Image (tube, rainbow, N blue to C red; front, side, top):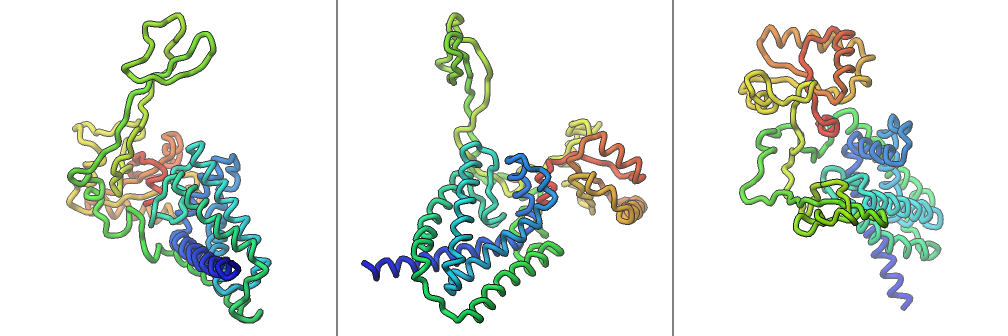
Length: 352
């Protein structure tokens, strides 16, 4: 029996250690994207003041994951390392359950853009991971290190250090392996097309009626709603409920609208199609939040100069932002920006 437990402990260490290192490396490959995901969680838990530190938290969590994974594989100070390991998985299990149950964050970002998991899949993954980690925690006093204290410390610190340097490199440049839908070389119109035979989202109409006696809200379909029973029931709302998740194209949320919400110009040509079908060069200036941009005066002068060169060469250059029209107007006036602005979803712009 003891030998079986020892074998299970070794397997658990290998499984959890390798998974933590892989998960940490994938997120460290795109710390800015992981930081955006953390900002969503900060919004959900009503701590928006932490949003400015999302990327810093992302780099720290990646280093923690990789460092703990390395320590687990070599058995370095397991009496101590088992505690942050357990606390980390308990924290993430709670986080993914909250997101799944209340449908707050639709993608946990556990594996970045390399692998998208639904909230319930993320919660299930953490529950499965909790089992070997609990075994490791229980057996932490019996895990023997592969190296002595000094080499073990050096290897563990190396894991933390390499992760931090790698994250900073990817933050300063681009992901080493780019899993993003807008990665360099992507043909945006092709990435927006549905393949032949692909299944689309399926919806059903749900009518909510309120029971006038009990106050209960009950859902009905279009075949059995109590429209004649006005004594007991009163219509409340009608919603379209998704009953089947369909295929999502790699790029499915890229759409340009003008500042008033319109998607067509005076010739009734959609902006999105108009700019994407242009056979010549087009430049998109991405500034998802102008309040984070307006203080960089030197950069704005360079952009204005670049726009002047585009105009001389008869090349399209437009700006894409998620800021409200009033903010855009203020920005254009203060920065003397002559290029046109169009509205695009903020998450899409962050991904780009």
